[in-house]
Image (cartoon, rainbow, N blue to C red; front, side, top):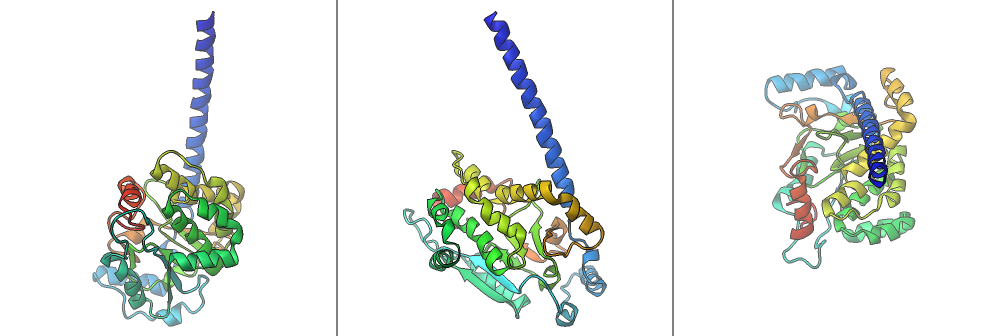
Length: 313
């Protein structure tokens, strides 16, 4: 009798787990379809720029002679590029954590392609002063993070919410002028295989989706046994994707409808930077190996944790 009862309970649990898995898969599929509908396309650029970009690709060169200043006169995202570098982030680890040569070139490369942009490099002291002055309520969570890289991730969302602009990790560099990507209220780069990344993001000042990001950090602050999983879910790309998924559940219909009507540039919407703009021909950004959190990223995060390098391995 006891064995029969146990078998019945196991069957119920297995059935419930199966239905829950199907539910999760359906939600994920619906969310990915939602993101697909928000991808930036060439139709989102002014026709004169789209033509110049395609012509430059056919000639295997950059459209250096294009008049950006007269084409992109009014943009939504401020012309600010933010980087974060915390020197000696892991005080107990041996070895220096100065910006490596590949990282130190990124701000200068972006300045060359975007001479009118403001370049901001945030260090630990400046970050702390900023949070104390503007977002003191978050300091208990900020100070309580188990892994220093979580503080860097969290800071990204606060900087973008407060100032607007483009955030990029130091292993990302500009390959073209970025003005064509500024006429959107916010965008996130498409990740492979699912969701979005948080190594490169942009938005207007005080954008609502970024407000939701900073308001969601505390409730996602959970220790999940392993460094990679904890960082990934609490502040990293999975956190970003989860907040966008919550947004999808509450506002997907109005956002997709706005996209269909060509009204996706309204203040409360966001778009997705597709991987075609990471391709060799069309990319706006250069990305060195090891800068993503998927696939080989486990090694990267372990490198963060055990080698003492705060952004790059």
